[in-house]
Image (cartoon, rainbow over all chains, first blue to last red):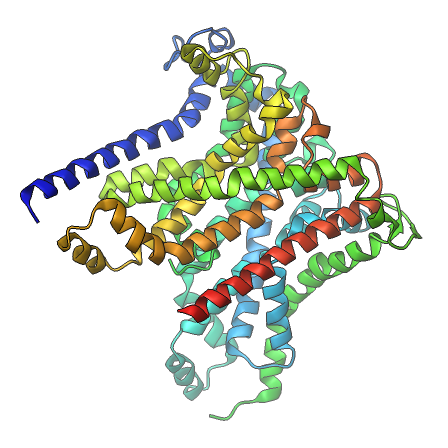
Length: 280
Length: 293
């Protein structure tokens, strides 16, 4: 290899690197633009030229959203329903994943195939029947009604089974020697050994539930029961045609999940690659 | 080691019981119910009458079904392959970086994926706003006429596809990065010793080794985009929903706007079968390529 080619490669590499950074900045620019517009007074937002920083920085739209609209209630609805979905999905999947991985019982194979099959079924096609079912159970416009149909996440049980499969058998055998009960094996060995996965899966399940649109949108008609993702786009009179106000509501809806991602970046990345079937 | 079989069964059943109960109620029962409903002339809620395959036979001559079907196909074409290549390009760029710069740049690309669709909708509705949107200022500068993108049928699908790629690309980037990391470095070192050009290295080393991931990304994207609803619905508000129908949107319209549960269920079954066929085909393809190795 001649020195000349090394130089050429580094030069090309340098361009690619700079280009990547530039594109990343452009990529995220709409996010910046949305946030910055929400901090401008309404008359500045509609100026016919581009201002990358507000002349007058104002939080009035946030104040308006938080005090004059139902956004506080929507926040509570979103938090309660997302936590509900997370706790129920992760715990039931964890227990079932353990049983499928470690125990032998009749029906086990059938159940496993059912889970793998459901992996392919698009839950969107079930909206009609979910709606009828929830209506018959009188659960429309309720937290339970928002939560229940969101509990189909076969991928979580699949990930749990994989992780429980990987725990060395020695632990089990040692526990059996000590006459430890099955419950002890589960709660003292298998679950604590896999806290990392549980954290990662819980964070992404929460994010998925927070971001869910279609089902919460169908399940709720009363504005005070809406989740924030539905409310900010469906209650028109709350914000009117005030761009900065609408954007401030959008920022408020996005902040919790954006923070969750930024704080737990590694865990979120891990859970997402796992959910696609790749070992993170 | 003696196993207490009866006890093991009991514990197994106790552990799977909550999951099975939820699954039966929310997944198995509604799926069966969907098929049954599709053979009935029924409102959304309330009893229906059995009409055989009527709900299906009227689909081919149904103009809205036609729109919904072809728009879905169009949307898949606009998003799946372009989105996968954009993600691959980004991943190739990000993988060259290291340390803090890498995690920062990755975060910038990934952040949109983490946001709710409503936020994405608000941001792009604002960015592409006909009167005040910053994208329109850019068009002005380039000397191109402004377009009310979400109000015209020609631009609607491409614009929503563009926003969708922007929104969901970060997910595919993560998968590609994991795939790139799994390629052993010494292969590249050998290639650089042989003085192989960057493009040839990509063409003959990276691309073939990355193919399983590329296939995975393509499949996930394909199945995801067939089920598209949220963005199309939100951007259609105040626009022309009937021109912009996609499959799930049409199910929604028949069931919740026209109050025709039976006819909506028939459309749902069609989409269900489309997704299953693609998933099964993909599964076969994967198995065939496994065997070839």
